[in-house]
Length: 363
Image (tube, rainbow, N blue to C red; front, side, top):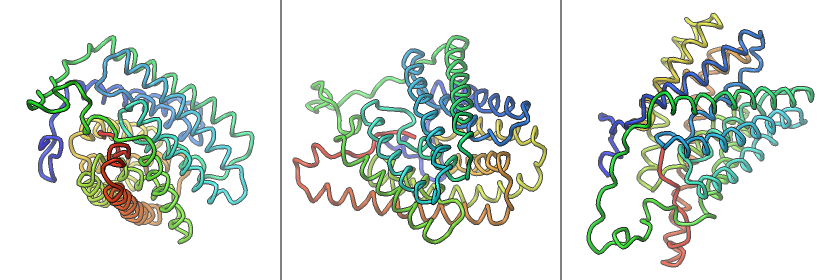
């Protein structure tokens, strides 16, 4: 258990397949962005990038299981991008964005519980819907979003399949032996390996997303979906202590990442150079995200901002301020909702504790 929680000054253990997974994600994301850049359609960046995120699923899993996870991820991401584009055509889209992200968080969390998805949680689904829906769009952009996201997702799945054929699956670490007399030794699922139900976790994810989105939208902050993504990232924590850690890592890592982002946004202005830097940041993210969340956010933060600037450039100063404020707001609200949910479960008694979920393990 100590290795799974490395703390601030130590990295968690490296997994056998981390390098292959990182290379796979980098080829998928950077390759998709280079295509839209070559077509002269940087406004399609978000469609392509979120479709390519299908490559992130099924990490450190055998090829067959990874393919199944990536196909499901491709379908869900494409659906979220398309729905986000449709929401972007609506009047008062800011509030439709909040409601839509709440629905995505609930449904995505339910799928995570049922499928034991890796990486867990609906973070990428909420991110995809929120980022696309936050921009006003004409109705004729909806089929374009569908086509570009689907093509990018299909490419990512092919990259994942080929990576499994070219680079054999690394050896999986053995499961530690269960102590004598435990449920695990008797063949029963352990509480740490199986979510403790299927209703509370999706509800907590939805409430945290809607609450953080409503607060950010009501305050007039420029990118409310960043707050919603931060909230759902914290709720995804597997237990109370892990959620505290994720909130602290999310805030500290993002604030430090804004320093890196500020430098890169000022220096890297050529579109091709931006895609190259995005590829490098994606590689670094995948190498460390399962080992140290705050450290990964030093790459995730500039990665997200660079991709956003490629699609729709905005003044750098307000952009950085929005990212910092919304991350703090979303992380704290997500933590509050998660802790309140845990308290309600604890108060409900032993029967509820057998049926109410904690979040699944993972990223």
